Image 1 (cartoon, rainbow, N blue to C red):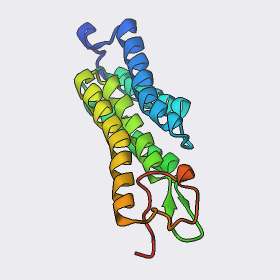
Image 2: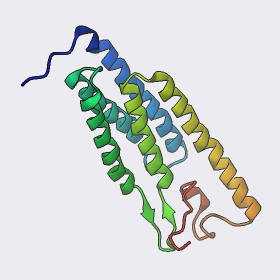
Image 3: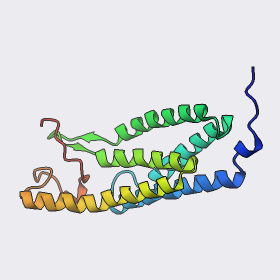
Image 4: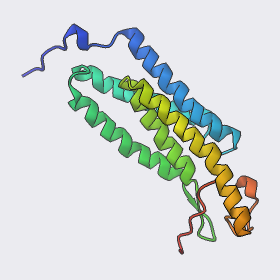
Length: 176
């Protein structure tokens, strides 16, 4: 038994597809630019490509059955979320003194994928709002963390490494 062909109104135009892919790439790149400027392991290209890949996979799922049939797209999105966990896991490092590094980078890769999905399904306001919130967290959060550590009178890593080389927001210790 074959599925009925999608109605003409359900099929995205080529221009819609390209705009969604470009929007996902640009919005992922915006987070990547922040990571690039702060010299983190995954930067502009990585985040832009993660968002583009998530958007491409989501759009492909939408085209399987058309936008009004969410089953295929939902399965694709589930796969993206699970797969991005593996990429994020690859950037998380445990140092000798049991500090965890790379959690913020892993989180931004996950957010980039979610932004790509949001762009793919045409949720422009959601994607725009989320990228602004993410950038505020990355920029303002870094300043707040630095101020808190200055007030506390110590560095996040106990002074064992150069503060400029550490990942902000990832001073979690496995021994705590």
